[in-house]
Image 1 (tube, rainbow, N blue to C red):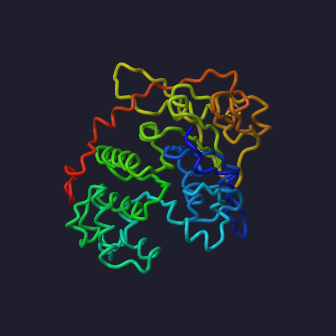
Image 2 (cartoon, protein in one colour):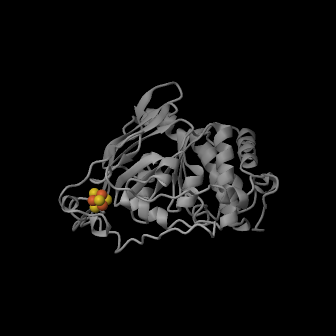
Image 3 (cartoon, rainbow, N blue to C red):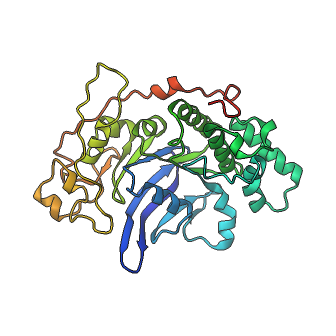
Length: 352
Ligand code: SF4
């Protein structure tokens, strides 16, 4: 792995009301190397978005640490830094939001939207310099720079997401949390945006945390993948390893639902029975046991711990060493075929 840039340690998040306490995240830990992309997958409600928001401090974690190694080699806890330190490093960790339709203020021009973080971080920056920075980053993300005085409604979904990406990148961050960044887009536009993210990663030396429910997209973009279930990380491994040789029954079930483009390949579907349990009243033992086809008595009583089963493949399952689970040989070419990375060729206004 490349030099570690972020160490996520034991992140726990509880939402409390007068009547009930809901644990949305329990002891989530993993490391990210500089320039890597970590995919986080799981069903809706598994806590992946909450995790992303805790990491960027859009919401405060109840406990845990996020150690960030700064450019000058200092290791600071991003969740506990002083106000002065925060002002210096806040710009290094940014987020791209899920919905390109609601995440942009319709009353602001694209220029104002992209320049807003610059104004907040560099209040003395001249108007000319501000505009030059916006034009530079808008060009990098494939936006037509002569349309920057227009409002978001004049742009298509893919173009709006490029505006969101430009806003996240304008401060030249080191780490970007992409929260379902392409989920609201149709497949061909998804491919363009993902390929753009990959290009920008190479060009700007970015590290990504890519949160998505779509395992095909995550497989295509990620170096390593974490699988979450009911607020816990249940498996974490190198992407090829996790997809071809899953060790957790939940991962096996998720992978069996991934569409395969080759009609000659027959995949046995392993549908998950029942609903994801209520996090306010989670099951005993392994949280996955009510839906697990491999459940034994021990699973109902004892919660499995996330452990390394070899080669940096982490899994939280009592039976990880004995089960032979089915993976998939997913060729990550569909998105490449569907999308283009062309910045010049991308539609500029509402032509998608
Ligand atoms: Fe299934 Fe038991 Fe493993 Fe949980 S610990 S995933 S119930 S086999």
